[in-house]
Length: 530
Image (cartoon, rainbow, N blue to C red):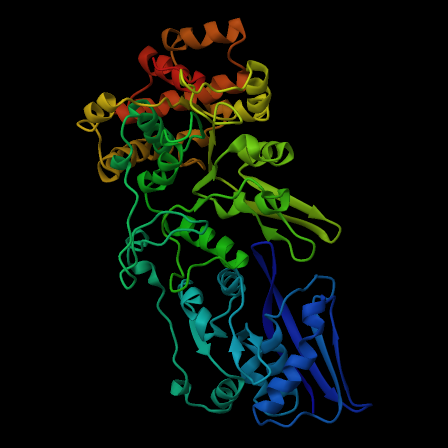
């Protein structure tokens, strides 16, 4: 009997920390003791591990068993440590070679019958293991495809504890299947998967055919379609105001179809967040398309921003990272939830603080707000007019605070279209594929301009750069400075109009924005067609 060691990973937010799992089977009163700042789910691991070992036909040591998870000061939560604890214990008891398990990482939850069940957060955990020098990781079979996303790493998928012990005892590594080559030799965008939240995406090759949203479905709203294209090209936020049935939700759902596929770094980052949240689609380990998340208007701050009473989970703003967060019926959300969006909109991340510590999640998303002009949302007709007073309308829309709307780059007012307008507009409607090609070209122009800099699109350019190396000539700035002097444009609004002007120039073909671009950008910010 001796001390055996193996390794696992503890997740804090989406950041993995390597944990050494040590097991000692020695003299003393029989019993199992787990130490190392554990939560309730992890403290219950002793019972799951005992049943799994016994039901896998391995003897349970009749001795004092001590299992330590180091570093002891690091809070550890969840059931992903079960497999590492069981392997370390069996190695300490001499059932498997101690030297072999010392260099491996083990992740997985144990069933009482010895089965190995999938766990959340495998991708960020395996990324942390790879960063720590791991060459081989053992994961549940249902998590193997997710772990396989990390290149230059051998992945051992297992389904039962007995199967794993047989492989550890054998010198022949072919007893279990291994995965060694990462999937990024192919183009990430070839996968049609996207994030959770009822988002649109290309149909999966093995699934039943599904309808893919297309921008050509929205007729009678040319100004709003143009606004959506501008937002997609520059990563800008959007607010749409209009009565029901004018296409606000349809436009928001089609915005992700205009966005380019995520690159390798973005895809891994987005997938890691959804892995921690447990929202990865079945059979789609990699999210290669921009996610679309649409929380209900009854959602709490914890659901939108992130949090929880126990383990801190990412909220909707983080699930929409590198994608779209759509808030329909925006004035119906609690004002505290709406105002909580202001900080992540500025910084691109959100920090959730609790008594046990703080966790930071990435939250670089495009915000799309949609609102009806009044609470009743009834169209004002001569025979049945809307009964909301002007005061009621102002009070309703005032739930969207000035500081929040000041962070929205593009504002569009949608009106009901007549039959003649609908028929006439159908001749000019373009499909999502056509518009997405223009968006991609505009983003490529921006990326070329930002080569060697940390930002990717116009919406992320900091203020210093806007008024420094990207400063516009006096003629182009004239309409903006007039509005700034008149008080209709704030300093933050000025920066957002400048970013939209650069996007309009990129869509036009490149070069510095001129007075036409700044005038158009000002009209988009004010919600006026210019």
